[in-house]
Image (cartoon, rainbow, N blue to C red; front, side):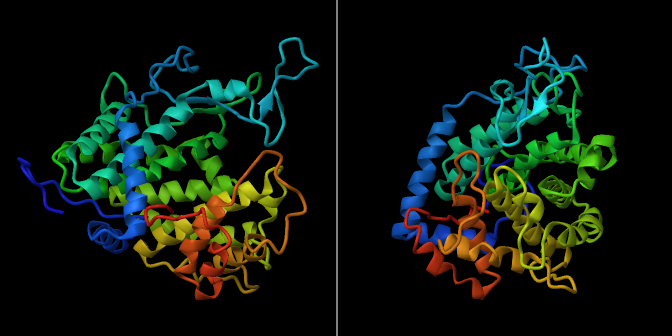
Length: 383
């Protein structure tokens, strides 16, 4: 997509998770009036129009300061921890796995971070398909406000994520709340050609992501998250690999996959493809689907450094192929999990990753499964 009216050409940003060729083909089909493409893009533009009305996201509007006293530091509370009814002040809080404490939801840094990532990608997609500069303008305003402007930027650390009242100010587990940041490099690729996205914005974002990546890989909390065995470890790897590729550090991306991601296969997957660590949770279907989505994204990223995670297998047959295939009887409604999730869930994530994996594994026969879910329509920008 050629830049128009830009004073200085901005280097094009590559897609990391999205398939540029598939996106271009979908755009062509949309321009030609394809029924499904028109329907999905119309829905997307409606969401983008709503995003145009949103206020600029920031974490600096919170009234309760983190322990550092710096409102620019991200702060959140562990969602599954509640006041102890046997203690006068309720502290230290106790865990109720899968049940979200409203106190945690009242702290908005997590929602604001997720919101800026979602809106920026939605706006970038709207610009990609429509060419309307208003979407790119809003996306760039959101990016500058949240990551770069001195008065409103988030500091590139997660020292105070998922704290537990009475126990700790911050835990490694909070790092999973920044998993949405992988949407930002994709958004910049979609915004290619916009005069709102200049070299200074891209350079500033790469600096911020590079600093956060440094914190992830060197801080005590970051290293602890990397050592977590379940989905937290998966999404830690995903972030490090994605951010490393974004800032041009392919060596770190490759090293992370080789030294951390590949060994996780034996830890997380049973020979039959099940995920014991996730099935042991109070929301087994939610966590099984969520974790597999992280693995599918890692498999896409791994190809950028010449690693075929899609077809990697341990000597006893554990691997991503088996893990995705394990979903089949459940999506076909032939089996049910022994334990239902304690809170309502859906098949959307499982269907999305299953459809993406079917591009790699023809044996998955995604069309048979998707026929059972006529309301599900996966777009090429969903992964």
